[in-house]
Length: 209
Image (cartoon, rainbow, N blue to C red; front, top):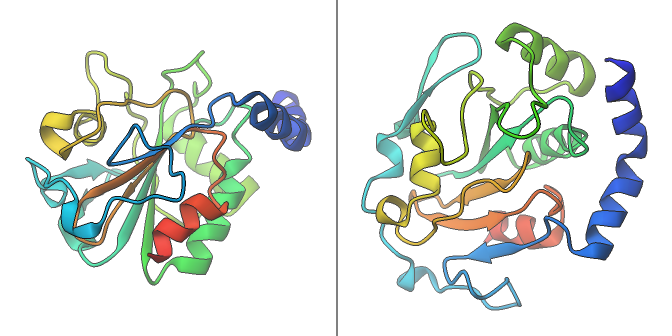
């Protein structure tokens, strides 16, 4: 861990407190994305049907292996774009905690990306080593990808951020550690900005729903 990474990890609680107080990167949306999870949830029976099946997607893992999403049916899936040199990087710790607690009903997939202020410059091998050594990550890491709406956007993030494909959401990641939750049936349930902690109630109650 570099000096910068150690400092970011140390000040993380203060950073999160500041973002929560100011409302920075703290929005959360369900399918009715004008309703900020104010205790009101879109009934399962009214969920928008994706125009392209989530289970038709796939990704290349950090180690070069292929990961077909077809095998994820019956589980919730949390997809997160990550970075090693970000104020939110310590959320890897919370993501691993969440994974260990709910892994029988939840899959977490991390997509390292260098889209925001070049906060993920490392190679795939360096990213994997960093995650394993410092956070004990055991959930899947995808090869470094483009997640924003630019040329080369990964097909998974194209699906997540195009309402014509997922049924309702056009929001691409606002910053590193934006979170997308998929239902057991392959429906996009919600979009959570980076300051929404992986272990906080708004997200975990959707996982347990």
